[in-house]
Length: 221
Image 1 (tube, rainbow, N blue to C red):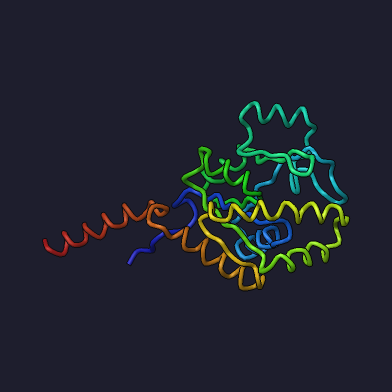
Image 2 (cartoon, rainbow, N blue to C red; image 1 turned 180 degrees about the vertical axis):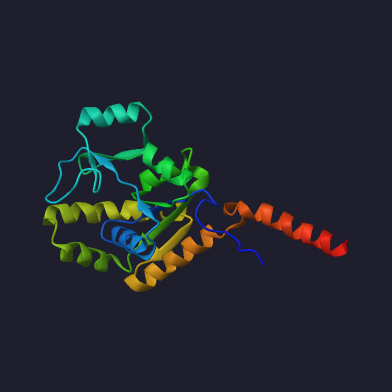
């Protein structure tokens, strides 16, 4: 029996949107998924904020000044963009489209506004969207404070914004409660595996089933 090649190149890549209120775990889950599957890539955002210590251009972000960022938006070079805490962020279109055409899945770590823009973009048919909820608001605040990255004022701002973010949960294809990181990661793996196996994402099946029909005809001859 001949080997069935169902691997790379047999399908178009997926645009995987991960959203959550700050502190609920979307960035952690994105890193875990990429550790699980090395073929996954991360959509590197452009931003107008200054680089932080140890951040690398083109790896963590594409750092652009306000004028350059505005030119990218005006030129249609962004899949989505938004202002967050006084800085502009956006997802450059070209590297994402190149990855999807090559059959590579791309993860987006973005908020509900960015997710909405991408779902309504030319990539809409390639998108799966996942919203991650915290187990409780008390736990959400605890995680933000435990990170030790932000002042009390910034944390209060993130908490104030969380209620509005959570209100958009029903716009997503899948919704997970991140009560346990390992369990949440396993559920994400299951979602991704199932989406990759959908009939309309396996174009090789058409030729394969034609071959099966041919075998029936040969058997009857």
